[in-house]
Length: 260
Image 1 (cartoon, rainbow, N blue to C red):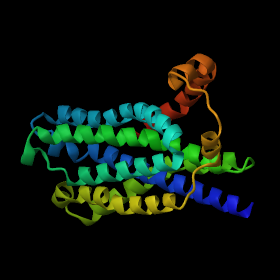
Image 2 (cartoon, one colour; image 1 turned 90 degrees about the vertical axis):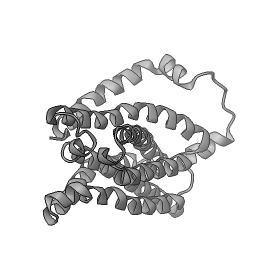
Image 3 (cartoon, rainbow, N blue to C red; image 1 turned 120 degrees about the horizontal axis):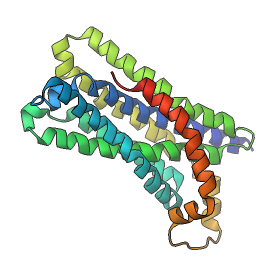
């Protein structure tokens, strides 16, 4: 029993840290998209259009999240929650480093914003898989009387990561000249975040596969043609209720958070 509880604590720690790291990277991008990126990646446009184009690159990451959640959820059922979580946090770390190292429009022309959008799509895809997969891994490890508590800890990741990411950018901008921050200062947290991702990978490697997935692998499961289609066909009322329930908090979160 003590071993199971210890593994549950380790699982929620891994899910919480990994989700926090991914939201940290996501928030970093949202902040710089409204400040330095318009001049670096869209200098040929007039300032207002450049800002809108930069914020649009932020939006494509959000648009990729549902697709990431669906596809990663499918592979999580096939390959395991733990393996999927190792993959999503690794992809997030790699894309963040590449963003930090990406040449600007002045160096490679139109290829710069194209690569930026591609990295944003990949990053949003990984975050979609992480957000749902992390909660699932923690809850499937959690004791029945601790599931609400564990889920709440993961839910704290987004606001805490938002505060931390903006604090890092504030510290850098306050200790560097404006030209230095616009040139390379904003890149530092993107590149350095990979060190934190390595910590997340280390912790997740020490977490076993969830008992629910192991039990599912050992049981005989009927083959279905399309799990997504069957989920909507058999449980569409529950899915719609949960979507509508989540719309309010999500709308409030993004309306208050949106980069300015």
